[in-house]
Length: 115
Length: 115
Image (cartoon, rainbow over all chains, first blue to last red; front, side):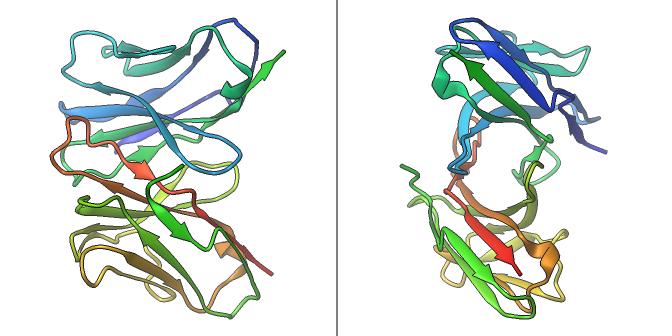
């Protein structure tokens, strides 16, 4: 069965430093997509970055990059130069081609950026 | 500001009462999702619509929950009767079928407290 696992319930990082949030997934489907979302305390889920299973290069979006290791089934999010506004809950999610577009989410990681 | 509109933002109700949530997706998005997010956990899909048709309601507790999207635009999620365990954030999302990534765009959510 398809599954997303985030093993870090909470993380701390110093402002301006980089941080890596872990995500592993399990699927037997060869075609899938991986997403990261940010959820501030306001509740809205904000899309950050996407990686397709056939993409040859790791995705990057500004300060966000996705460390995609297909053989290990991992899709870690790297945030460079952390800012205080990065403090939030972060969710890894997966879409697999056998369904109709829905995402399944991990349990999330709470990131706190220290000044 | 989120372009997926949800209301109400907050709802407090007593158990056994009826409650309803409304969602207006981004214009042109044919797919609409209702997710439930229990505090400290990742969102879980309740129901997915393609236009006005339900394509996945396998996780919807149909004895008390109902959802409709009569004209294929806005949607209503109803709970009757509400139970203590229904306390959660109810997130609505929409997606554009022809997009590159198929990312979901979320509203700010409706936070339900059942007393």
